Image 1 (cartoon, one colour):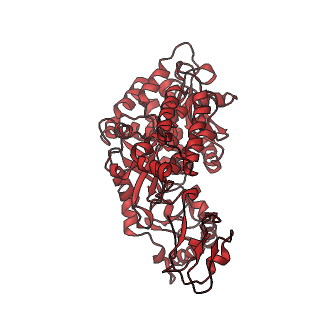
Image 2: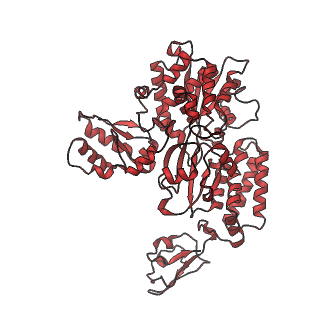
Image 3: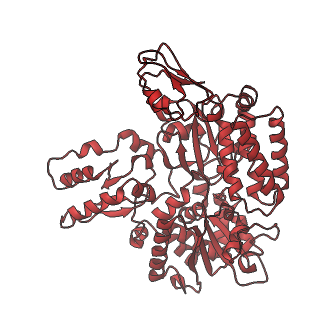
Length: 579
């Protein structure tokens, strides 16, 4: 009997570490199962903490629930059934196609033996013993694997370019784990749940291009991922999967970790390289591309976490098997982090070609509190808002680009009818401005001007020509910025203007926020027929803006009102509304 506790960051945040410690204490001398084991995030973050007993899944297990599971295991009367996952939740998990997430939430990420039992390092052994570098690159080409970090560039092409770079025998493999999009946690979950898959993917890529050193650039805000990577690297060295003469060959390769300071711009490969070299993370012009002149001026290949995690599966099962999944122009699966107003937030992996509706209402369970689906932001600050009317758009690189959004690394922020799209554009512009390296004027100054206009509109100071000014400025920024951060920063503005122009017009012309989100544009009003004159709102109002006598309808003075919203929360009779 095997007991595992999901100890990814999401599980720990929900209290899974306390559950784990309690189970270990109670089961320490219980022979049938012994102490519980660690596993990563299975993807159902909305149900954490999660405990697996063999194939049975128990969810939202608090300390009381842990005691019930102990009773269950010991054959005593218990209430464990109330913690068991519903058939629907299990079905949603089973409906996914998991390749990059194959082992996440299944194996102990801190045990190389468990990874090996799941065919771990067999792909690397196959490459080093039975294939040459041309065959490996050809298999990746056949698979159609494209970079999962955002750009969607063919993986084989980058590998081939690095392999064919001349003038240096010294080459490098870099794993870009600098995941910084708001609402994105795909790479973190893979590193925490299945670090050896990433190491094996890097090993195969290193063999393909002829590199002897690998570096994982991971943001320091991912301490658990770093701890598990360090353990995985140490274990791989002990097993001989990293180091000299791997699998008895003449190939040598090792990996080290570099913790980044959390600059979003370092997700751009040339900025990442600058940071690795000890400089400030600032992009440079291309060409030369990293494949020709990268880290230390040597040929360098950079892929992100999810890309490397797919590689071992492709080598074991063949490129054609991966290419059979997905669409004509987008092969395989894609991992998405579902956040926002989604009912069942978490991590999912689905075949390319599913629709937005399939993801949001299928594996995501729809919108929280049965509200209306309004839009989804894809691609993070570099992406765009896709409205609900386009929910049947297929998830592939081409189709998403046609909407004005991008696939990005896989963040999917779901919005309902309480979300103001002007404010959403402002939020992402604020993030981009703070994360800009400041190297080029269009990004440094242009995006700041965009943000100022959006802040003015949300604050009730919109002007008649603001829409035209936003569009013109956005296009100039896209055309003149040096790197992808600046070139894509206006996307949230342009897509919200394209699909939700009426909200901008309401803000500017009518000084109203239809989503009732922008406080400066709200007016609070008491409905006389519903007000009982209980005086609670008047007594609690911080601005003394509400007047009236006991048992008579009250009135709000809009001039004094600071629009804190406390009165709406306090009123038990729904007598206070916003307009």
